[in-house]
Amino acid sequence: MENYFRRFVENLGAAHPDSCDYTKNNGAYDFFLRTIPASSDIAARLAIYDSLMAAPRVVELSAKDYEEFINLLATKTYQSSKEVGGNMPYTVIKEIIENLIHSYFKEVVISILDNGNTVRISDQGPGIKNKEKAFEPGFSTATDDMKIFIKGVGSGLPIAREALSFLGGALTVEDNLDRGTVITLRVPCDNNKKGNSSTEFSPVNLDLNKRQKKVLLLAMELGSVGPSKIAGELGVSLSTAYRDLTYLEEKSLISSDEQGKRVLTSLGIEYLDEILK
Image (cartoon, rainbow, N blue to C red; front, side):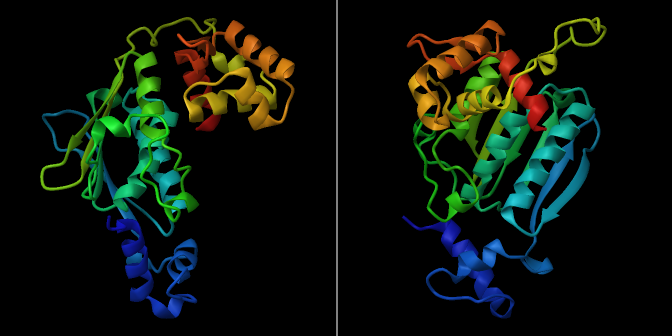
C-alpha cells in the first residue's frame, strides 16, 4: 500500500532542501518537526452557516506544523460551534480532527450547521476503504510516522461515536464526491439549557484529584476500562484503582457496561469537555 503521508512529507522536504538537514531515511520527518516555510503552511477552511438561506461565513486557518494545526483547528471549530448555540463536545471534535492526518490534511473543509449541532468534516485524501472496520477499537492505519503527531491506537472514531451516542447524537462516515472522506457529527439541540437555574448541578464543580482526572482521560482514550487496566496504566494498586472507579461512578461520570467495564457517561464527557477546552 502506498504511504501517502510519507510521500507528502518527503515532497515538502524536497521542495525546501535548504531549510533543514534532509536525508533519505529520516530527514523528511526531522524537517516536518521543524518550522515549515510559509509557502507550505497547512491550511483548512471553516464554513459557518448561520442560515441555509445565506452564504456561510468562511474562516481560513493555517499553521506551520501538525500539532499546532490540530489544536488550532479543533479549538476554532469548537468555539464557532458554541458561538452559534451548539453542544458539540470539544473532545469529539479533537478526536476527529486528529484523524485528518490520514488524509495529510488535503483540502480540508469543516462546515458548522444546525445552530452548531452538526459539524461536517471533509477532505480530499485517500479515503476510508473499510468504514465498518474503522469503527472497531484497536483498528488503525496510522503509520509510525503519523504516530509522531497522534496516538494512532485505533481509538478515534470508536470513541467519538460512543461519546455522541451517550448524548443522543450520531457519527456517520461517507465517501466524498471525487475522493476523500466526509465525517458528519450530530448532537440533538438542547432546548433545556437556556433558562435553567444556575443552581443546577454542574460537573465542573466536582472536586476531582489529578489521578481521578487521569482515570477519566483513560476511559475516553480506551473506550472502556477496569481496575486492572487503571492500575497498570497509572502505576497504582488495584484497591486504589477500584476506589477511584467507584467514586467516579457515584458521581455519575462513568457507568458500567454489559461486560462490567466502566465507560464515560454524558456527564463525564461534559466534564472532560470543560477541563480540556
